[in-house]
Length: 287
Image 1 (cartoon, rainbow, N blue to C red):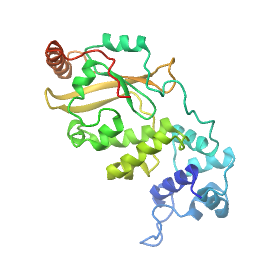
Image 2 (cartoon, one colour):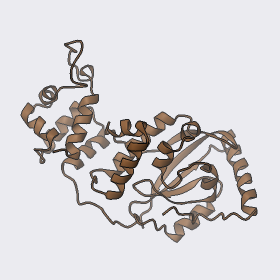
Image 3 (cartoon, helix red, strand yellow):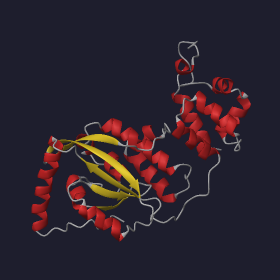
């Protein structure tokens, strides 16, 4: 029986090399990609039979001591270790929590409208775009899939040209989705999204099965916008306390930089479109 915990352990074992854990390579052509089960068990000081039961889903209550030993074997950081513990001891599912229905607080929408010189949008845990301001609409215009950031990244043909570091960004996005989802693998909408992305993108499928976990932190991204050229934007996100599961994302350039000039140019182009009769409110929702 496959379980989220077993899938995670198997994925991490298969991407580890003997060199990474100080083991000799031995036979030149190993049958098993990564580490063997008995090697993991020995390194974690547990029996091979017990480790096999963990991977096969026949052992569901490993102790914290065992989990921490496995985390050390797989060189997991603090965030991935926490994810491992959550898979082993999942909390109550958060199905139906506030913020997942797509309603964005009116005060948040007003704030987004005030930040009209930078792209701002609201996402839920599945990375559905719940609302975005007019600058975000202008910045991300031209994509086929604007209802969900993951679909935009992996199903839009122009995405790999828009994000200059697309492969690196894609790995981060997939690891971020793993992190925010946690152990909630029974969410039907999430399962549908993962199935759609896996069928539509081989890149996503290969990244998803690695089980990398990483919550996105303060960072910068490089873009090549079809109208205003190359930009570097610093981005950060904030949890919306009145709507658990929703986050507000903001992207901005360094003051006085060419990227700031490019966004100003895009803003001018956007205002020209708005004056022609297009709506400019942040109340654009996709759900």
